[in-house]
Image (cartoon, rainbow over all chains, first blue to last red; front, top):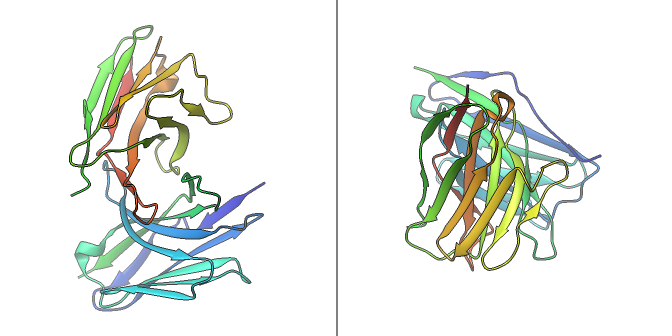
Length: 113
Length: 116
């Protein structure tokens, strides 16, 4: 069965450092992968999308990589700030015009001042 | 732009009653909306895909007669939890897709349902 793995343990990082979060998947060939941010008691907020034929995407302090051979995506936040503290979810989507995605459990990031 | 609202933000009800949750796209039209349920420390679980003007598509294991979905207009989808029981207590979140975008989902703020 399809499986998405994110490190459900919290990731603590010092302010100013680069945070790296991992999303691994098995039994899945996604056409694209998305990353969302979720704050406690709130709905997720879309951050980035990367397609299967793309290796890397950047947006301001965010960078996402996608390795379809390793079946892995890495999500980086450079110069992390306490305001970046949240849970980050990866979501995998298929092709064929069907827009639903499957979410991972998320990784909680805590940026320490 | 692309704002999605949900109402109510929280609701407490007695076991056996029905609860309706509204999801609105405020500044865009959404032909497709999704309904999710999220239990503490768990991932978002897709319950159903709501398509304007047609019947919702439910995920495996989700009872369509218990979770009634109505997508009567391009800006409104409703989820009714019928005959609610304590095990239905959860965080319910809707999302909508902006046509022509990156397939990103715009989420509502969620509804916390507590069934006593």
